[in-house]
Amino acid sequence: MWPDLITAAPASVLALASTAHVSLLLLRRHRTVRAPARVGALVPSLALSAAPWLLPAPAWLAAGLAAHLGWFAACEKLFPRTAAPSRLARQSSGPLATAATAAPAAALSSPPPRTGASDFQPLPVLAVFQETEDISSFRMLRPESFEFAAGQFLTVRVQVDGKPLVRCYSISSAPEATGYLEISVKRQGVVSGTLHSTIRPGSMLAIKGPNGKFTYPAGDDRPIVFLAGGVGITPLMSMFRHAVAAEPMRPVRLLYSVRNEKHITFRHELDWIAERHPQAKVVVVTSEGPFPIGHFAGRINETLVRQFVPDLAGSIFMICGPGPMMDGMRQMLALLGVPEPQVRHEAFEAAIAMSKDESAPAARAVPQRAAAPAPGAVAGAGPRLTLRQSGVTVTVQREQSLLEAAEAAGAAIPSSCRAGVCMTCRTQLLDGDVDCSSDSLDEDDRAAGYVLPCVSWATGDCTLDA
Image (cartoon, rainbow, N blue to C red; front, side, top):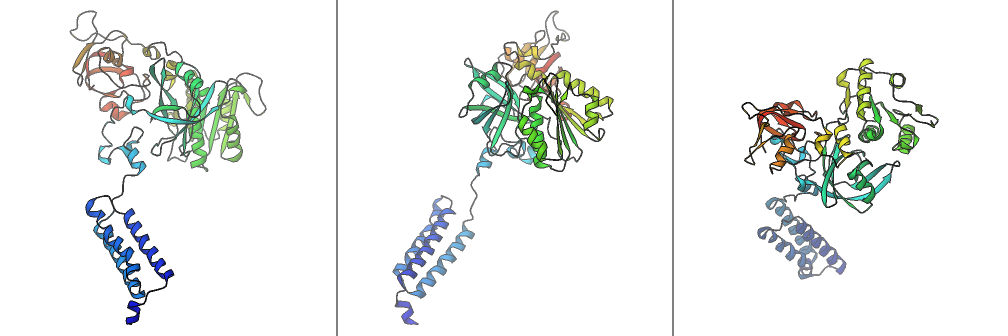
């Protein structure tokens, strides 16, 4: 017994014991938060790591390892590790966080905070794809915490002649594409033209979002029918990609109307999806010749819908395209007996109209209203708008939206699309009556008194919480 306490173990055994001690030391170091009281826990581990060379006998080696393991276990109890915030947790408080990650459950019923210019986040552009002669897809690096529903849109900010301009563009990639985001933009105005002419791989693009309520009908087994016109395919493409990835058993059909063959966006991918996914059908309709084999001539009509949608009354219809096309599709589906709640559309026409003429005031993109005189007001004067937080009262001029009146008074209400779509300017009406033309607000918002000042007109004296 006594010789075991004085006879040194072979060098290979000493090296193995030292390696075990050093491993425990490094693991202890990794799991120790940098605080003086806790860093002191490393001293015994450091001493035990040197023990094999001071007490090289086998019995002492075994005792040292047992002691080190015991000390490690004691430290786990005495100094439990507090997890450092992950990248996901850190970003969840940033501008691109979703409601579920950015606020505690108790606060989810509270109005979301306003977002301003500082909420834009620059993302690197990974690639640019020329989809058609006038539509390009811009692929950006997707932040880890960025969550969105298929069909939602982003707000994009670009600098034009030294001035920041913002526009809304639908996300065309699927939520399953975790590494990147794509928007597909048609060249039809100053901002979209700037994107087409200046954005290249390696550029930075400032975005904010996501937003929008025109989203994939999840939690429903009924077949989906997408009715797309022109560049209106972009939010539907996100939904189509999501459908085949997330619900491969759910029947989905895309009826896509374009001018001619050159205007078929995502053409090769649509063919690939239809070939590889039996539950997904793609029908392309061209209004101008030449008419390719397999495509239909004319426009989406009742005959075509009856031919490719076997269960009209049992399907959900998602429509996006030019305003007249969407109106025609809704009327046609009503005549076909499709229940109104099963027909959904993207009310994005005002933002599209504005993007075609950025030199025009934003008010021209929405119906102009004449402000009604306030009770007791001087003849010819408009209603009075009071901005509670800013402490300003201003007279609302004829055909002036509440947002324009507030800006004229020097009060800043954050805004983006200025067309009643992006919800950035959502503000609570504290008193009075206004006419808000947007369909983006839900019943709860309206019941709580929220309006979108960019498309709201005073019908009398009113007060905003701004």
